[in-house]
Length: 606
Ligand SMILES: [Zn+2]
Image (cartoon, rainbow, N blue to C red; front, top):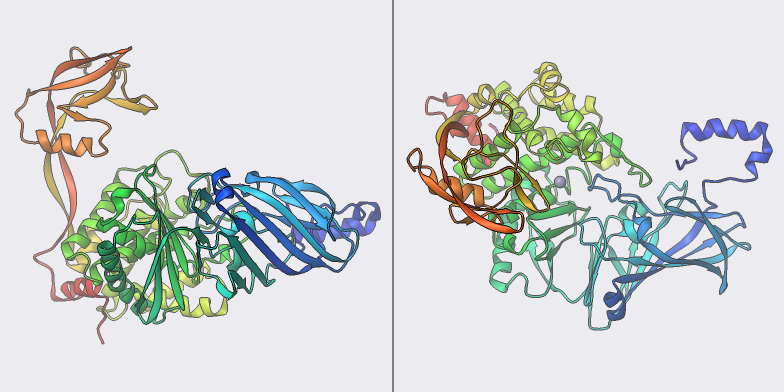
């Protein structure tokens, strides 16, 4: 699609051009160089009402050749193509106040034809009407924007150009971003990668700050009063507890100010976060406020400041914004970050050891319920969000792989080495040189930390291969084991599919048991035993209520059939199931107990 002057493909093309100069007269990609790059972002109450933000990009060109400007198709950290250019409206270009001719060279690139050297401006409005971590979202009194949405770059540039951003907004409104301020609502970035890695809040929102690990941490929350004062104090306390063990892993605090940009919206369920170099953006359902899982989300996003923002697979260095950039090591960036979120929770005292084992157990249960897939395959497929259930499996399975590596390293060294040591060594050897790490570098760091133990077999079977992770055998090295709780689960004896009308009862399988009397395929389940299915926890509540009921107990089941509702009495059946659970092994050796303590406290033997 778009070619950069650095690619081998273009070098071949240059050879063709030399033989056929007529082709060179019509270049379709690559921009004339530009300097003095400045972006003006205007967001007012009127723009908020229209859900528009207005952008002007100004720059200088030294020649009359076309300038080709592109918008990213994705935001780093959110590994999926979004084509932000589709939200651009009212595009125009001018030089010295008179309009310039322009056209598009591909779906997210605009080619502007200067009349000669000198300053040039482009203007457009951006439709900011969807709330996603990687997008832009306007309300009458508020705007979230990501630089990937609004800031064009010249095609073929090495992206190392400096730029400034000025935000024009209502005088009483606030502006917050991780970008360095240089004047009145003006901010500067030394290169394009940083420019688009520092999202903004503009408008009315709550903002306060505290010192954590010796640096300022700011907490910006929209809408106002969505996080009450008492809860804000709790958040800062929890943050200081989870950041300290993370700093201990890497030995530095790589930010001067860190900013949490948080939006609560009743239309959202659950929560999602997106990491940046010195900030992160959270979008949360109201019920997430005050929930322990929110602290775990903060821990995950903040750990990314090291693991992925500064210590990154080589396939992702430098970021390219015009196409997908798959990496088979995304499980290290996301899964191991999830493992460290759990470690931060227990090492910071947010949860106790039992709580930590429960966090890991949830991951083991989730992975066991999904199709077997290798971590490398799941990592490269992240971009297309597979629909077989494995869309996000590199998080929990990657976390468990991190746990097993940690235990095996500690076992091979009698708890002198750890995964912490691997993270620190890969971080120190690549982040400071601003280069990515290769698979070979990762695995040799793992092996070195484990006193030379080979991980080739582990890699072949569990990372490149699809074998289920050897949870029980490795956990025993850390004084833990996989136990099973015997569960007796009530069953209605129907299967359902979920569509826009709700849970729809499906035809029984040929040869299988028939539907309970009174129910028909196509019925939409509304309530079971008085628990409505709009309750997200209905299944858990149903199981809890009837776990000890006797065989044949009748429950009322309300269904919609056609246009009417009816209630049918259904006799419950029961199945026995083993619920896996990570527990401490009472027979653990002294060495295994030391390893377990090392995991929980983040310590190794002196
Ligand atoms: Zn993440």
